Image (tube, rainbow, N blue to C red):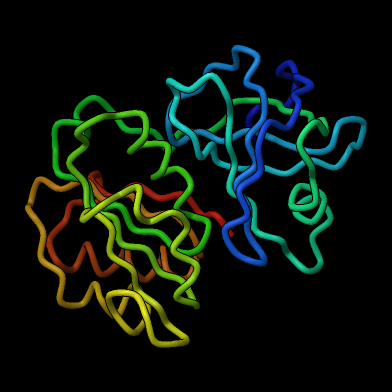
Length: 219
């Protein structure tokens, strides 16, 4: 576990974009915090000891920070963050984590596979690196959980498991069964741990070397 002694900043909330009843993008001051796309920060209400880890959603060239938050029914911090208003203050520490694009990966085709809010680091990848060569496969339960998919254009593919909608009816791993990709592809998996374990094995079975598969368990 990385040290938690990094300096924490008090940051004002600048904007809140409510994407669904349960999810919102919270934008707050950056105060010069340096991070690499794919890293996460620790966020909580100012003055409250409860903090949680959130991948940075925004690009690293922006003068603000954003996180994508889903309200968890039994989660204290997620509810607090979803209920914030402009001008409220949050406490931010970090960055942490190693789910970053290497220089070599940036020159190869990228297969980005996520479920739910696990799409967050991939938004940061795409917003930080203009012209990134990627395909993004996003699995959610509902069709409205596509979380600003227009940003990714034709690179985005939506798998919806519990209702009609999206590009494919079923789970991400159902879609992966018939997916072809270049042998030089680097795959990045982020989201539900069960998806990650299953997708990892499937990609290996399709001939992708272990060293080209990168994972971040999100929930």
